[in-house]
Image (cartoon, rainbow, N blue to C red; front, side, top):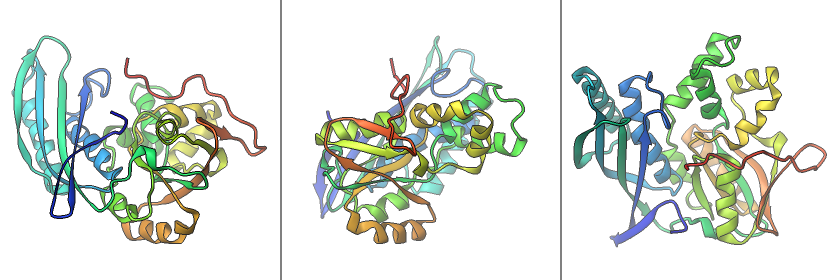
Length: 299
């Protein structure tokens, strides 16, 4: 499989797609994270994949393996979190399974979505396209480190903002649907901008040039980077962004900006597609910035 969702059927002009993601205690969330927020993150990371394809959510199934000794209160809070986000994102639980495990808690969720019109695949980028990203980058990765007690001198408001972005990603569902007519290649960013943009490059047979100075940062991330500029690598490769990354013809810029305003989500042009098969991040002098890793590694 070369894409992040699978098309399974078509009906009445709509493509039906499916996506599965799992989260594991200690790897994708901290044991101290509130149960309702764990449940919301589980649902939202899957909805983010739908957003990356301009899809609307139709329903989901979930398999929950709770650790031995988990309290009824924790399970109740987990269920409450799912229910709250079901109402918020207009998606229904279709079924699933629950069981116990001696190991860490593990939750796998499969979401079904519908796309009207063309499905933007990783392989659709073209030389000359511009590269766009929704929202801001780096908040999730930095928020994880703040959650672990790093950077104790960070102002409380900035710390809270980063932790919330790590625990509760915001799937850009409306934004994804609004830019669907203009996007060529499109996906969400979960493993880090460099790694996920590289997936597009490899599938499309193109190269990408990203301008470091163009990258959108939140106020909280900017405060932290001002104190620790070496964390720029974490912004580029840390993951947990859950923003929509896409390429589009340069002629679409004004319509993309209008769609972003309608969705209430910033959209930033961060680079362009060229020849080659790799991602290069360029500083203000046009020199390539090297990173020790390309993105989050699952194994």
